[in-house]
Amino acid sequence: MTDPIAPQILIVDDARDIREPLGQYLRKQGFRTRLAAHAAEAREILAEASIHLVVLDIMMPGEDGLSLCRWLVAHNGPPVLLLTAMADETDRIVGLELGADDYLIKPFNPRELLARARAILRRAPPEAAPPPSSKRRFADWTHDPDVMKLTHEDGRSIDLTTAENRLLAIFLDQPRTVLTRATLLDLTAGREAKAYDRAIDNQISRLRRKVEDDPKNPQLLVTEWGGGYRLVANVSEAN
Image 1 (spheres, rainbow, N blue to C red):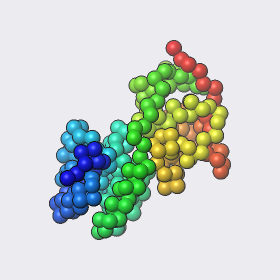
Image 2 (image 1 turned 120 degrees about the vertical axis):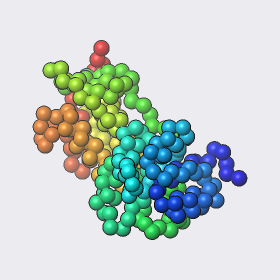
Image 3 (image 1 turned 135 degrees about the vertical axis):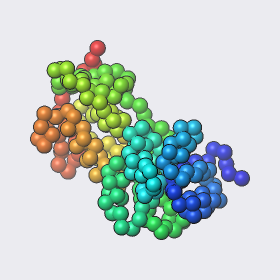
Image 4 (image 1 turned 180 degrees about the horizontal axis):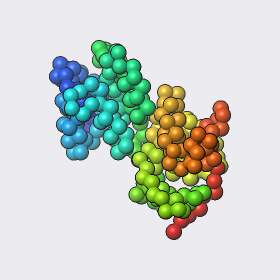
């Protein structure tokens, strides 16, 4: 009998001959599992169940796995292990850049998937810390983490994604301090730094496009070569 508090894995794959045997195998290994044949069914399960890991096929009819992965990352969803065909190298890279935690090429050995799933679950924090609830001012910007928004002194308002909101809050907590990629990964998602340096670099690039006058020549979020990134601004509480 499966432990009722064991981690629950959602398997999303339109191929019945993959998702059902895989679900059965993972249950035998002590996990709870839920199965979905497409993204819409997965969203319904995610809305009502506590899911700790999503095993997600990229190639599905209707909404594909990359779209669902993007939605999960934007909404601070559970970690994602992508299933991909051998030829889909571009999709694998895009998936990792979107924030997926790992990928596995089909056909795969269930034991390898089990090992990767366990590794992801070990890395994942129980719950990501929420950003501060108070508004803060830096340079010409005011950050309101509760509504995930930046407001410029000239009246412009810019929406932030969940990942951008959390990342900016971390820089505002430690202005003028060099934060390495490993530190940023630990603080944002508790994930393994070596595998996801590119994910942090891409988040920084997106954030720069929103706060910098010239993103290609950043003056606020600067790169410390060999070290990481630093917010070059004073930070104060905003009313």
